[in-house]
Image (tube, rainbow, N blue to C red; front, side, top):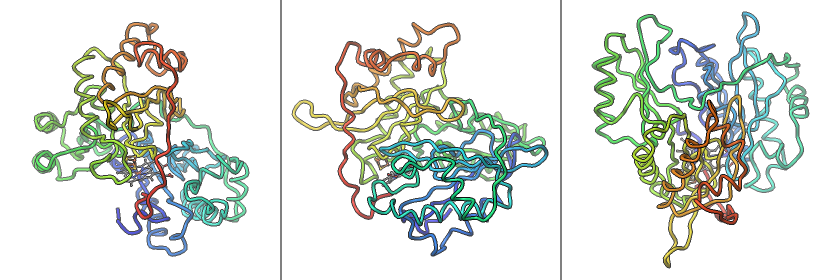
Length: 426
Ligand code: HEM
Ligand code: SF4
């Protein structure tokens, strides 16, 4: 990871699975390929003046824990007979115009990865239409605004790289709600385990960090890794140490198995540290989780509860079961933090952008609204019906009514947050 070029119109750190080379279920340790791609782009002046930021993930993980669906380029390992190559997705992104990446009809062989990434980056760099408006400058806008399709993109890419890509092979995207590697799991190295702990909304104290480091030294081999879902992983734990390590972590407030609310909550930086924020997100989400754990101890579903402090969607509310987008509402004579609800987002097999449900309320009222909604689910679900299916079979009007506890008119999302200040664009 490097800070070089951060916040520029360039390739961001390429992300891979934090368990590469460790996870016993992975299809491929993609690290060497990722590092090769990183060496190609890092500090490369040919790609330091792109229309906007450019995000790449390359992973061999079966869980797709790096979210290829919301990156500009997502390469996910896949098998073709005995050979392992990659599926290729392009033009994912969130922010105010969410767009899930489009899969191309391609099986990318391992040696083709860097030429393919170079080709995609060149198409992006040379798309003059993307330089007209910085708010419409991500790769996804070729699809969203300029009528590109998977076919047009693929033929442009093949012209550029000078060879035809092999046809895609059938693929089954992961079906899990969580992609967080939380829990105790066997490694590919015999006798060793990794332990993933859920860090509530990604905030950890210095003391907790020290404890995690001490426990990793005492019970494993000193390594602590971080995940995309704001969690910690301790790898290379001998089987006989797993319990002591998990107990030590839990005692420090880092549980291996938290409640669905704890495990599924993520929050962006929010007003504490982010100049673009409309709302405070970190303390808010901890409070919401504590409230829901107390009010709904019987809740038995996997749930992603994502909180984002402005429409930029760093907290990924568009791909959450319950996504909250920060707003301000005037109440009792002053502007107060509020949240707009988006429901039913998912990635993977059932992928879909969450539905703006037309309901918003003060931040202080969010636990009441979520409790009402989830109680309706618990009371009315059909046998075996999960939360996703429940949301899918209800209209926006019904879900809005569940949230509000009564019929309420549609509230506008009101996304305008003003222009992004220059040089803090992220
Ligand atoms: C604290 C300062 C930050 C700023 C100013 C910032 C800024 C932004 C902006 C402006 C966007 C929208 C991009 C667009 O319009 O195309 C965005 C998207 C996003 N950011 Fe951040 N961000 C910050 C922190 C973070 C952090 C800490 C993470 C995660 C570790 C993160 C993850 C994301 C993700 C996942 C998206 C959506 C995906 C995409 O469309 O690229 N951001 N951010
Ligand atoms: S979503 Fe908005 S408030 Fe949250 S970190 Fe991103 S830019 Fe800041």
